[in-house]
Every structure is written in C-alpha cells, then in structure tokens.
Image (tube, rainbow, N blue to C red; front, top):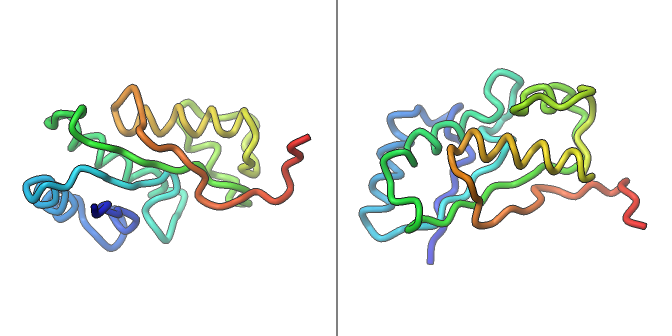
Length: 134
C-alpha cells in the first residue's frame, strides 16, 4: 500500500496540481491520504492549514467511506500564530502543546478544514518533551 503525502500542497504545489494528484491517485486505486494541521511546509501564518482545506474541498465530491484520511497534531511549537489559526481559535494564543485542550482544538480545526466528521488516523507530528504525563 502507498499513502499519498501532501506536505507541499499550498506552497510548492498549487491547488490545481494537488487536485490532479488526488484524482490520479484514487483512479489508480489509492485510498490513504496523509496531511497535517501544520501543512504546507514551510509553514507560515498565512498558509498553515491550507493543505487540509484543499483536501476538504476535494472530499466534497468523493465517497468518503472509501478513503482513509490521516492528519497530525503538532507537539511543542513556539509559532504563536498556530493556535490563533485553529477553528475556532484557541485562547490564549501561545505555544502549542500536546495537552488535552491543544489536541481538542487542533482536532476540531482539522475536522472543520477537512469537511468531515471523522479522521481515520490521528497522530502526533512531533513530540512535546515537556508535557507531564503524570
């Protein structure tokens, strides 16, 4: 099985090309698409979340039950604008962490951007080495 990665969609890859890649991938039997709240890379305040939005627009015309969508929550990040870009925005704007409030806000934002009510695989993009798990 091959998973289609999407990390450049929105920076190096324009939306028209991303849609062509998705269509071709599915036409050839692909069904597993990986994205992230932090895509595209390199991430900026104005583009963060674009890849999920584009996939969500494309998903509107697909049979969602035949696709596996994976997305990720970031661990610690000092990019203060990430939390403000979540839908709805998290308060207060500050560092992202792998705690319950950040994970819930990130998940809710990803679901909204992807235009779906479920994600097949949700996992961490990178660790947060400073979160107490006690």
